[in-house]
Length: 420
Ligand SMILES: Cc1cc2nc3c(=O)[nH]c(=O)nc-3n(C[C@H](O)[C@H](O)[C@H](O)COP(=O)(O)OP(=O)(O)OC[C@H]3O[C@@H](n4cnc5c(N)ncnc54)[C@H](O)[C@@H]3O)c2cc1C
Image (cartoon, rainbow, N blue to C red; front, side, top):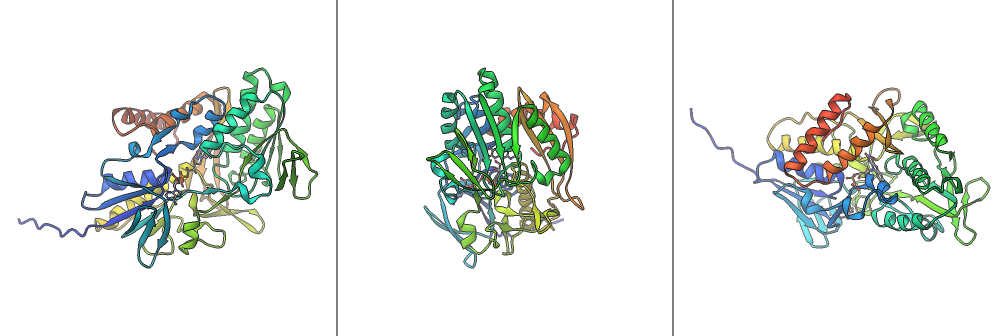
């Protein structure tokens, strides 16, 4: 029987943004596709910082160099890493223009994440600290070490924001930090948010459980507070239709916005985020995918009567979506019918301090609204998060494989759908 060599038509896949989703999609594509196809990753930062660990950086449980790694160490060999800022995308010419030149693609994956926009609220940028970026968290860490008592206001400025659990985790870890310093009785912690309950997307039962966790740590939770501006002179927060609130230390979850280049390329909708098919992650443009925080995915249920719910912006979703996109593109290039679909399942480990964490997981595409299960606070969830951090930041090699196996065994033992 004669074997006929297939004619290879080499393809170029460009991934813009080498954070959680971008790294996974690049590495998965490189693993699945023969070398004649180019996998190009464009990332503006040399160092990757693992966002879930910002909370431990804030409390002094991590040093800055323990939660960062050069991006070059986190990509498989054979991924072409371009350290450059993507400046614009020309969909009709199938090209990406970067600070280092331009290149054309056969497939494009947008994994640019979300931008923080503290200057979009009057007075906020000048007055607030934050644990939502690496540099801001280092600044907050300094401030916390010098703070010996007073009112700490943690404010979710607007929706959507990354990781619906993070503001609550931050509040509990700050409470824990001052407990350890013997100053808890001198520090009042208030958490303000425009939402009607903690993590509304997860439903009323989980919201109640998180409120109870906050209350057990004497953290006051203030729903339905929409911040309009900050008066830095008077150290006051000015909320919509509420009395001004005084603070001594302001920690903000700043407004988020979709990266400009997606909007300018005409891929975004009126919200600025990029709508995608919820199963395939395809945008409206041929061979262009978007995943992770930049993508906008509607889910069943309504937040208010007139506001549909959106899939939360979280690394767990960016990770799984990246695997789906990689599989679909690789299948298409190899002449197979793509079958992988994102099915909306995800989980969240909620750090509660004292080495404990809560755990919730479930189906965000369930009808009529997302269905989540909640597990009791436990040390195992905290250890799982630490293990995941160690796995994520380890370069390819023996150590990474061992950590991956440990994570998979742990997930199997606890019957949870972790993707690593
Ligand atoms: C404090 C905190 C705690 C969190 N905890 C959790 C958690 O416990 N669990 C969880 O699931 N999620 C968590 N998240 C959310 C999670 O980090 C994000 O949802 C996730 O990183 C999104 O992945 P992404 O790939 O979409 O974007 P990102 O990981 O943000 O990556 C985007 C990348 O694009 C790059 N980029 C942007 N613009 C350009 C450009 N023009 N040119 C080139 N490169 C560009 C950026 O430098 C970045 O590397 C947390 C977030 C924060 C802030």
